[in-house]
Image (tube, rainbow, N blue to C red; front, side):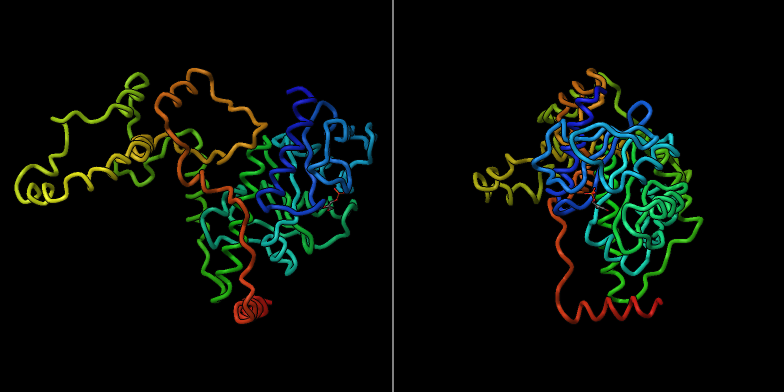
Length: 348
Ligand code: 13P
């Protein structure tokens, strides 16, 4: 991708990060790998004012070129990109729930299977170090070992990914997990999934990313994809009269139907076009990010894209919902807060 596109991608990622509620103000920062270094957000600039040439180009040796100084966190961006060849994007936010946990120096344990979206059985929280320091960068690298996210003690969240799209998706999932965990703590420390269960989840996610739900239970129920040609037609074609439900053959239903002729029919025109289509396509469910920031191009080859279009198949519901418009704030009631406080202090 050209530098121009990467700069644009950084800006749009930052804007989406604030729009969705994952971040606020000028907190947070985003970088993308380039040959020998990175492009990174400038320090303390409002994201909505950023132009392409405000993004700073920095070499791994710490020299930079640009109109502004790089993010104060350039060290951890640089160190992560240098040490993690699997990573192209580093995204840092002060998202509310992750930061809430991080203020207690708590990571996110295996209280929910989705914790595996960070690559392991937990999401660590690094010890505190002052922002912008090499210590913070060292702690972050350690906490990110074999993971794609970590919390920073008394600070926020870091997510790493191969694309902007995945980084936003992952950050949203992790912020949601943090929110769930804070709420779960209100009624006590939730039980954890054990190592075996988490290993199964991790394997499931790994294999599902190929678009095939594996038959882990060996019950031979793996879904069979429709043939490429048949897919759009079969999905799109309305049922012919003679194919219609064996459900409502004749008898007792008939009078009932006759009773509500026109009115019942009307809503039925909202029949089930879309939903039926989604149901037919389980095999395409992936752990891929939910919602695309406008900048990110669909990577699907044209033929596949056209096929998807023809079939009007929407993204899986689960993935769709994964970027909330704006995470709701923590319940503010005194009793809620005291429950959470009591749960947190019991842990210490
Ligand atoms: P910058 O504006 O320097 O990127 O700092 C924001 C931040 O979140 C520091 O941790």
